[in-house]
Amino acid sequence: DSGVTQTPKHLITATGQRVTLRCSPRSGDLSVYWYQQSLDQGLQFLIQYYNGEERAKGNILERFSAQQFPDLHSELNLSSLELGDSALYFCASSDSGRFVDEQFFGPGTRLTVL
Amino acid sequence: AQKVTQAQTEISVVEKEDVTLDCVYETRDTTYYLFWYKQPPSGELVFLIRRNSFDEQNEISGRYSWNFQKSTSSFNFTITASQVVDSAVYFCALTSSGGYQKVTFGTGTKLQVIP
Picture 1 (cartoon, each protein chain N blue to C red):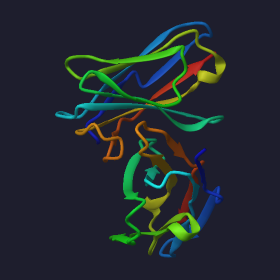
Picture 2 (picture 1 turned 90 degrees about the vertical axis):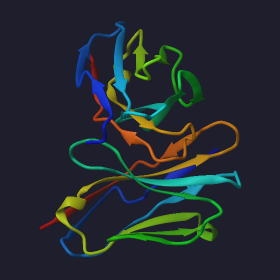
Picture 3 (picture 1 turned 180 degrees about the vertical axis):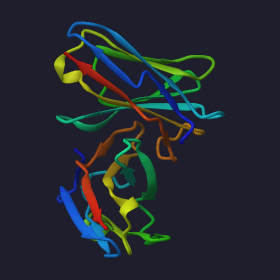
Picture 4 (picture 1 turned 60 degrees about the vertical axis):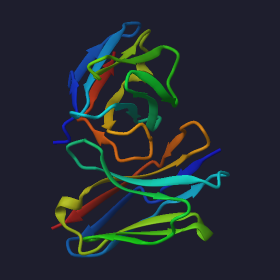
């Protein structure tokens, strides 16, 4: 158990809808990272937040947004969902703001868009 | 543009055999980091190792070892005396440190260790 929690575990929704994925980092970790793993695109880094501020941006679509709250949990919002957004979404956390330091991953949220 | 190639899609070995997972990368950056991650059947990603471009020392951690060779742009991962618990998908990744973070993952190698 990495100490990173993600909810929900599974999410099934329809095209055009909006969903919110939630991540709670390990106690004491200030950085949260979001990743997408899909059959088509493989593993992709989406975005990093550090202590409430956006730190690094990867291949995140404009329809997606994220934020990190004062209690350091993070939410990833996906809107105008398309079939291709079906994927496993991982959250990871680390105690530093450096992307290259060890990250601890949550169990993921599996999103299915029908 | 960055690229990470894991040419081996699937590998099967018998328990106790040694196995090497290949990773070849491309980058124009002089400073970069390479990583290996493990994704067991349970699905969670596990960080295994990080290596920066200035450190070509090989590393050994128990049954795991990593061979970084800049001359061939490779960062290979060897498991010695494989065990069933090593069955997983292994990903190699590359990130540059040019002021913003861009990380590229390989497509993964699925390792099956047969008892």
